[in-house]
Image (cartoon, rainbow, N blue to C red; front, top):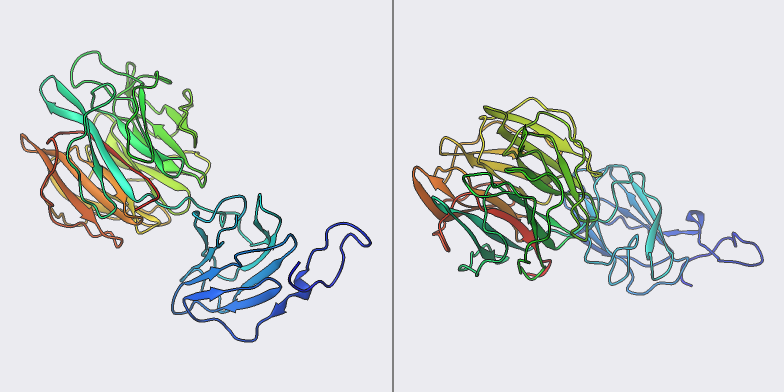
Length: 425
């Protein structure tokens, strides 16, 4: 065992664990962007000017202990990220992101063994748990081509935002549906139907971390059109909510586990509507906004990290449907485009506050799809402009800036769905 031992907490037998009192604090305050630490030591980290990534030892023994201190109470401005260097952190491997972003935190961690790895003895806030890393690639799939003609083709998006050619479709061709990432690196698309007729369905299609769309999974939950969807939580869950069922607009909720299992209906909250748009923001949080209550609305509903939908928040921005939503910048979101053939956008802060309209960029259109890609970037694609189906895309920077049109690839169509997949670029 490495580190300094000041007491045997089990006296003559049992596990010997270092205590905070025995930590050897380093006299030099760290101000750089990186820091490699050793067991038995304490470190003062000053992030006044920049973030800092702390790399833990590549090997450890049970009882090894490290303490990190917010020297200048600035971690809320510039975060500290922990690289567990091949070992687990609270039971998750080192592909997961561990971020401490609360000012004044002291992080006291001890190594518990290979299974759970490094475990905080104290870190002040429970929300500083490992968070699934953002997906790198994306997929657009399904949609409406023309009267009586839905499609099930898909188009993969690389980690640099390049949209690929059509991939032969799998599953029921349909539109009026939605998709979300789940399980950290996979996706699911569900519900929807044909443009006309008694066509509502509850089938779902899983998307592997290679971007392969699976055949239909039998319907679970009430068949409906135009629900909203988003990932949430810190362990890879997703949620489908709202939508138009045989009984009209609803607040129905269906949860998706981190293994892709769709749960039966749960009661929702907020105003019943269809065609809202969902996106992740913050740490494990999500939001659904806008939609059709019988007329266009701009209300929003926050979703907690445990999947609880909050009551309505008064609307901001132009009331509309047919818009797209995506996360960007690691902890924020953006809604853009929508009915009336607009290209305005609305940014969402990392606390879930929706901003007023931002002047549009790109071809004004409606019924687009939005997805994250490339870690902290976003992408809007496809849609209807006037009477013409489109296949162009618009990238979103990690600052939330929407770019001008990128030449379209794949079948031009309306109301596809999109989601991120894969942790590998």
